[in-house]
Image: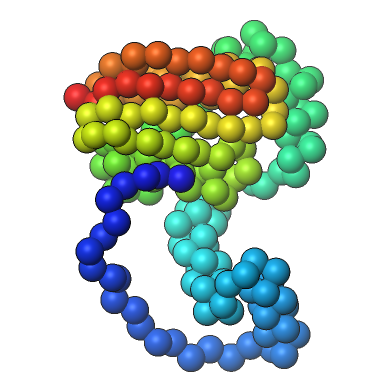
Length: 184
């Protein structure tokens, strides 16, 4: 979650009529009810996810893996193998952020990419606190252990320093990483 100043203006909306099968409509109603939202909100979130993540993931050749499988693969991978992959992952993440933001790589696009990755991938939950325009504290929570924390800390810290941030502190636990710093 990124804590920022709320917009004083609401986004314009457009009304669209669509045809659905009765079964799909019932599934949407059940999904909306279980999430405590309206069907319109659920449809909007589904379309937002498709446009912001799924469509781009498909064009980049991304696959989805069950959490348990990812956890088993991570457990079977040595620390050294993961460390060897850090530079490649940083470059890949940077390329994906640039692709999603029309080659704009700055802190705002990075925060948004972290938030979207956390929301849609299940790899972590993102919490960014911006106490002022220059200072930040980022915490990524996950359930994949210390190896994943070390991996995330390296990739994210290096992305920050590559964007010109000064890292003031960082820490890892088996369930989270926390990085505090200043943007240029």
